[in-house]
Image (cartoon, rainbow, N blue to C red; front, top):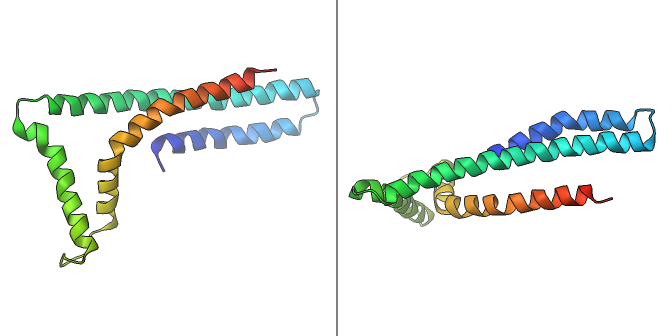
Length: 142
């Protein structure tokens, strides 16, 4: 579970009892709808804040990687690829039983993060914003 989904789940968990309490209030339907809309808007605002935070975090990580890639030092430019290739070799050797030991499951997770992290991170960053925008637009329609 990612940090953003756990934050969003936490906020939703906090707002859920409020939403359920609204259902039991003895007020008009319009007032209930307005209260529910406020709760939904709270969820949307929390999701937007998390997306903005993750976007800044990804930008910071990207700038670090870019600085390393543009570095004059051979080691600074190549330590990440070398590390990922090393883990890839270890995983392949582990898959064929060529190692005298079994790799811990964390090694697989590290390889997945290393190989897929950049692509997935940028994809999420680019798609979550429009999805949240579409939800906000849909909720504002009468």
